[in-house]
Image 1 (cartoon, rainbow, N blue to C red):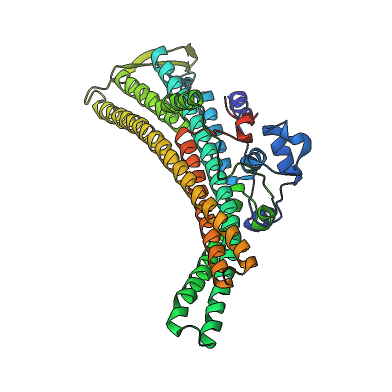
Image 2 (image 1 turned 30 degrees about the vertical axis):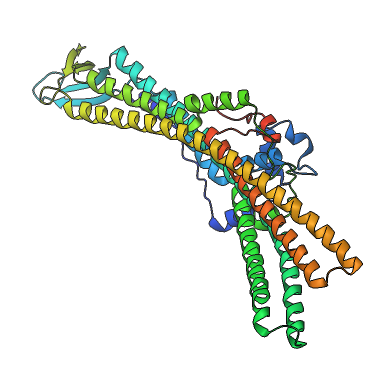
Length: 457
């Protein structure tokens, strides 16, 4: 008996404390930079090709995404959930642990007064039930894997959206600074004309209001830029100072390359059949169906084998009993009804998501087409305004017009250039929305970024 207890205890896991003091985790985060040894090691594990020259001298969207996947702590939660699902699957389908009972008896008048006995209760699940248990666990692993991939994509989208907003904010702040300076010059010019008696005071009000509006728009742009920088740092999993120091190349920002019809058709089909979040729901539906099968199987009796050993007052006995668990009262109807309802819910979610993906792809494609048309129209207006500004500059040199007219032409050119920038922002947002509907990058260095080496298969 002592040897048996020692053998069981020797195979047990032992607790190892792993405290997480908040002060220590905060200090580690605040000291984090892209060149940290821990991050470099993580990148080397996930993307070996990028680790050769890490951190890169110039960042692009692929290296920034690799940094986010390595550094973002929220993605670590999905990794841990996947690892937990894999651990559960490793023991699914194993036989249930037996029950052990010990008995003793003392009979004073017997020549051998003591009785000792050991008994085991071994539940004997059918092979079909064990296969169902394993199938459920495997489906949960697939769902956790797909969820990890879906959350990785969501992280990519957050990084790309924040990076696009940061680029837009910088360009818009620069354009508005120029426009605000021009509007202020016109307002000051009008004030001088009013002071000289050349114009009435009311004539200067529109110029002054335009200057105030431009200054307010410039302040709003700076606020939006600060918000985009904060979102970029959060998506990367870095302190704000470390994220702000990253200079990221995005040469085709605002002018994404046209899509080849074959590429779009392939990405569309892949999204409608196997997008990561759709794959997670497919696996969840499979698990729900297996649970219903298991619930139905549990309405039938399950055998219990009970071998034992007895020292019965000097006589050795080896009893053996065979019993069964009888679901006599409700025939497991409660569990069956619950599993059946869960399957219906899982199926409805799957179909609803597939329909939503279909609608989002069509809407995003249409929005990108409209945004591209709007950008082309804005560029035509900006080209015409730039031409008028050039002609006004020449006319000013020849004395054909005064400075106020030349300044008005410059303001028009700045306003139409800002309108072009706004249309570029809209077009880039539309492309990101299309990529999000497809869960796939459509251009740029991200398309060549290999799947993480440590990603679940």
